[in-house]
Length: 240
Image (tube, rainbow, N blue to C red; front, top):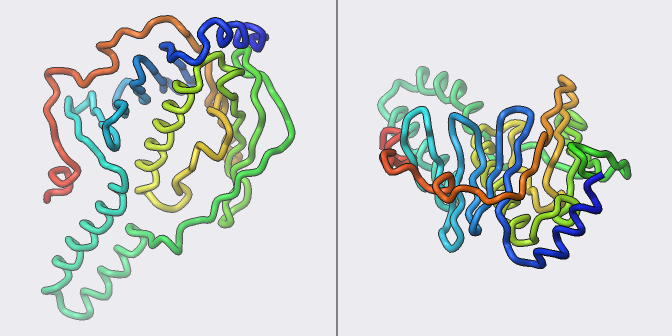
């Protein structure tokens, strides 16, 4: 097992941040270098920079990037509501009622979001040679949806600063996913007590797990916005 190696790495590095890279079986990855965090896949990624608010979303397919500030989901939903109200204003009452009913499911209200519960199972496992503890994620709309196995900074052999940075990145990804509503309710990764190294969906039994973690130096260029990408915004994407 790599627990002993992880402890040795921490003893050598102390609390200083060190580069590392995580690769998952579904093709996603996480990079940390010089306090910067990049999490994504070959098509898109989210970049977090120390001292900067929010996150930068990079689309490799569109060759664009945009900055999203904290709380952007609320602003987006408010803009969507404003656009819908303007569209409905000139419609006859019968047509308006029909369109409102169709649109209701696309803009879930906060009180309609599923309630999430995180429960420790007391079961431990080993993923890619790293020890982890299993946690159930349940919703009041349908019971347990996922079982995740989380590993701490000590178990992974990374610094606490890098560990916290990766958690913030994952929470940013969850904030983006929460725009979809329904079962995509935002997951607070800080409450898990670790970084997920395996996620098992109860519905299809498919696993997404860490296949490797490297602590070698990460090329700084991989943690930058590509020079030839153009800046865009969530407003322009919505036609605002």
